[in-house]
Amino acid sequence: MPAPRIWAGVDIGKEHHHCVVIGPQGRRLLSRRVLNDEAELLELVGDVLALDDDVLWPVDLNHGEAALLTGLLLAHDQPVAYLTGYQTPAALRRLGTKRLETWLRARGVKGPAALAQTAAEAAQAQRTRLPGEKTAAAMVARLAGEVMRLNEEITETEALIQARFRDHRHAGLITSLPGMGALLGAEFLTATGGDMGMFGSADRLAGYAGLASAPRDSGKVSGNLRRPRRFHRGLLRAFYLSSMASLRSCPASKAYYDRKRAEGKGHKQALLALSHRRINVLWAMLRDGTPYQGSPPVTLAA
Image (cartoon, rainbow, N blue to C red; front, side, top):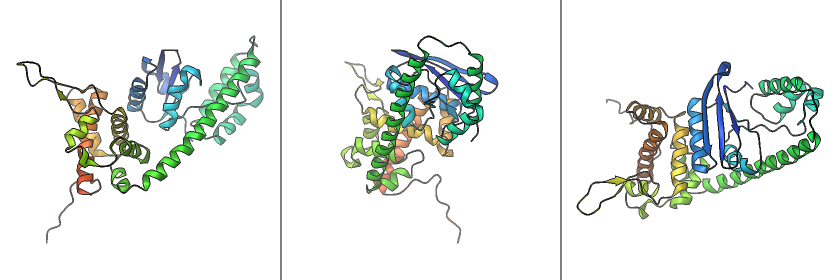
């Protein structure tokens, strides 16, 4: 398994985290202070994945204030490595680089060779035993084990959600839209019930997701538009994340996103515009009962 192309290290804080993204040859690609808030963390994940989708996320804590970030990363298949059992420099030196690499590889860690080499070099550089080192190591092992067990529970729950989703009559249509997998499809059904008739139009569905502007008229002033203050954040999340995923698998989505960026929109604004477009597409698919088609069918001449 090759080493990740970029590393997104996060310094965990109580209210804010600081993320630094390092690319090839140690080049800094991004440095940002971000609020410990789901919406802002999801935006950070999107911005990092826009740089490269081959990422490893090292964090300096895996509990407490890091719980939300860790949960989001694990829920979206982003690799976070935990070294249960080898928390001190002396333990890492005894283990050795090759055995550490084997240990990491057996647990599905991404880029085990590079990670093992980095950890071994750090262990060789620190020979001083710090006060409380053994106690801290035991705490790290226990907390890492809890996070790994939580990850197993998340995986089992996701499997149940996927199985239930695939029993729905619209499951095949929904997942034919690039980037819309079973989990995001389940979020869409949870938010809408799968019944497009209750919304009346694609624009109303887009407004329910916070993707269509609402009028803000006052007195004699009319024609003002604003983003609605009340909308279904789960539905917005499903389309935002599926749009982000579609950039890697759908040429039509990538072309639309690139066009919006060329018009001067930022990454987030371009993704929101793409999400609005895709909600209209999914609306038509469910209305007509037809799966997604990336291009119009070709009619052969007689």
